[in-house]
Length: 401
Figure 1: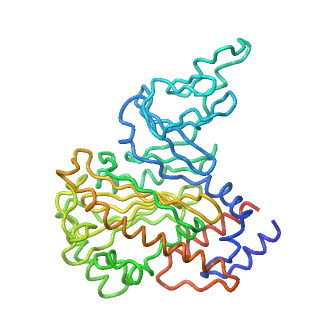
Figure 2: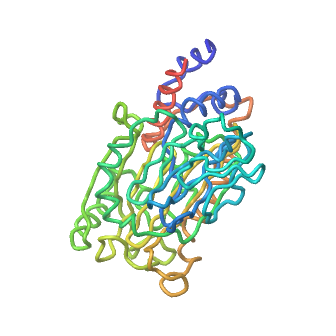
Figure 3: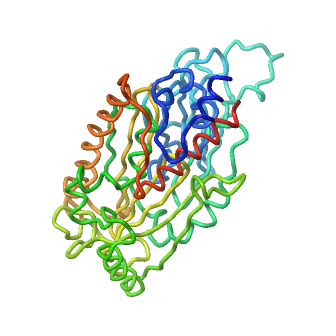
């Protein structure tokens, strides 16, 4: 721990992390237990479990969570661990059940997680104390958030501050049209760092850069001009302009971090499509296509990109100290029909090609970081969120010592 404290104290402000933060397994184990597992994570959308008994699993490292719709319509989360001898209770990634029955010895739980049957169990054993372990859960405008801590940081301000922007995009009334999983050969922090900056967008993502203004510095004429056109058009599109910043360095004490902002698209582009044309029916309160894209931050590793006709969700999760997973979800209006209202390949094109490029970019970053010649380098002025992420990470890691 003394060595880690020294490593943290030696870190140069606004420079990339020392190599050990990306390579050392002991540091990885500590940060996962003390930071990652105490953060709120986007696990899915309520449209995945519309009916009583519908469930899906959220798997992370050695943990598995059952997210299920109860008889009362409520959404609950239980650890996928039988209270008998620990077997996984649900083996399929999704399904519908009347009860949750362990496949090992048939211990059975109701949809509220209570143990209701355990053959040959002594009458002296109190079944009321043998229900499935719950996992902290909250639902924000249809988005299912979970936290592995028994005493999680509050998510109340996130719900309060982001509810109106989310309602604008009709988050409750969306459905998942597609889900893709991308494996990235890199430490999880490199995946989040990459997502949090657009310094690399112009050289690395030509498909994105031709339509999205974030490739420019926010003080540039190109960005400011496009931004003014987008903002001026908000009202006639049924939209409002929100600027909310409570993430990383701006995080409110005792509250999970969150943020919202909107930036412009260029010229003919009215959504995140290859040709600039509409991809799906308008969503939420939006009455007309607006040439912009909105960013939502939901905790440190979960993000949304919202256009006039669809929303893209990103969740970054660790697998090992040098491998990670990126889950991407494309969401459209719940009544939209594939093949009629939207073409799936057109819908996913931009962020599929962009994430595949990021797979390579971030893996190459890790390869370089692993070199004996790697040393920390200074962040540019266009990497402010990345700077804040590193500072936030180091502060939280210091608190564990």
